[in-house]
Amino acid sequence: MTLIETAISGARYQPALTTPEATLEEFYAAFNGRDVDLITQNWSDGAEASMSNPLGGIRRGWDDIKAGYHRLFTGPARVYVEFYDYSVHEVGDLFFAVGRERGDFRLGETRVELSIRTSRIYQRRNGRWRQVHHHGSIDDPVLLARYQTAVLHAKA
Image (cartoon, rainbow, N blue to C red; front, side, top):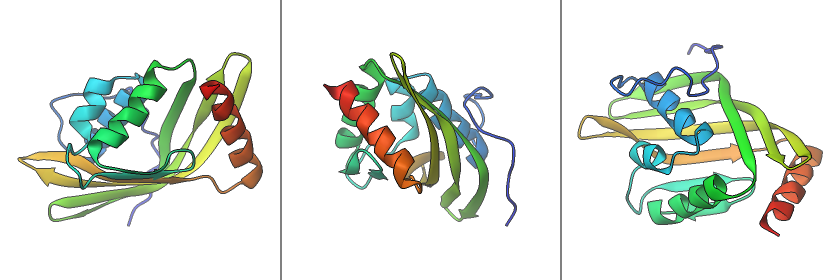
């Protein structure tokens, strides 16, 4: 296993590339660019897709996951994250990436620096990698409370 130190933010996204790293670059380009169409290409569109994160609980199925992204992308808050200190493990038609995200949440004058443990699982379907699971956790309870409070104010 090799830890990769070059951060992935989406800035190097190239649609023609199909490696696991390029697929991760696509996800972060979609997320940081608030692009629902591109994030839809990155995720599996079926009921097997699942997401577990510190604020959204567990979402099951693409429709539920997409609704969460839609709310985030069209709301007043801005979230930027990049993936770093990660490893990629490819096994047949699956790959998973395990690492960390850093970035920030902004809403008006409120800014919360983010530090998230992250894993993503992808399955190759019809020659294309599609995300089937994401898990994110915030280790620091003070940071988690600040983030949760900031997001609750964004929803109000």
